[in-house]
Image 1 (cartoon, rainbow, N blue to C red):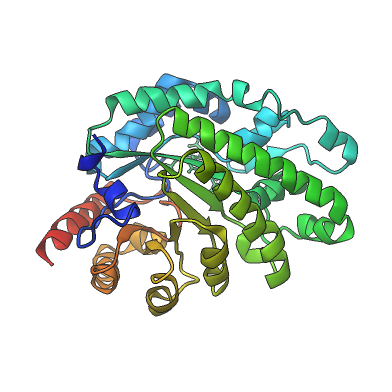
Image 2 (image 1 turned 45 degrees about the vertical axis):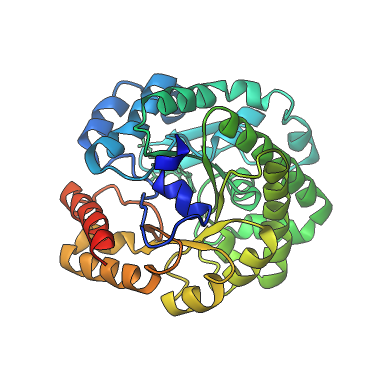
Length: 347
Ligand code: CP3
């Protein structure tokens, strides 16, 4: 079955000269059918834990645009939630958590029952795999320990995550324990997703860009290296994509030391740097700017052509530099999908 899947071929370096594509946040609020389905469940996390609905949300963009990869509809914060934290999504505010600040809070988290409580996510993966076209690869994902710790300690999103950065320096033994627990939790969640049908795994480190070089080595590279090793020990053939967002030049160290098969690059990485420094080390995925996709169709198609022209002879996966924005016109996503399919055939 896997022989039909372009995304797997490219991520396993079995084939160059063809460009598979998918988009981060390809499911969600820019699609009217998602908004309609979403309206049937009040809480966002309850929606994520409804296997039929989560599976349907995963399939919606595939039906419209025919991406080569379907990312399971879930969220990175299901890990802190099922470790026992209080996690809520407030309309217009994003996630709100009761912050983790003490040894007592940490001791209350329970790793032993987490994967059992995450069963609805694995069920959504099984349902989705059964319904996906044979040529579409199913992608599982998790937030990386640093990014999860950002939300868990800060208690919400933040511009610079100052509270968690201060704590990582002022109480390093405590912070190390948080990161170690999350490293184990993420590894277990990844392995369960693979066992439920995920054929690719992406690790989102959305807030890695706020760290200094030393902190990046400790809190981003070292945990990712352990997670990759744990997954590869059991499932050596499952490709792993790392996304140390906004890491700029630190992408090079990340790529060298974590053992990921691919990295998703964002706007902090120039295409020439990616080509010269990253492409010899791993497969590149990325990096169209989601604001251009939302706002300017002509500029977007020009940028897409430039990206493909640079990477077309390498193993390359077309994606964005970050997730699709909720106000993005469907027409633009349609035009981009068509362009990637036809342009990569004609070159
Ligand atoms: O299509 C896909 O990419 C799969 C689904 C997916 C969601 N979240 C659904 C979602 C994925 C891969 C994520 C990852 C995620 N979640 C990240 C890492 C990627 C990134 O964006 O940096 C992060 C940091 C989160 C945490 C999170 N979840 C925030 C900060 C928010 C609020 C911001 C917002 O966009 O509203 C969410 C909510 C969320 N996750 C929504 C969706 C579709 C919106 C809620 C809704 O539709 O009701």
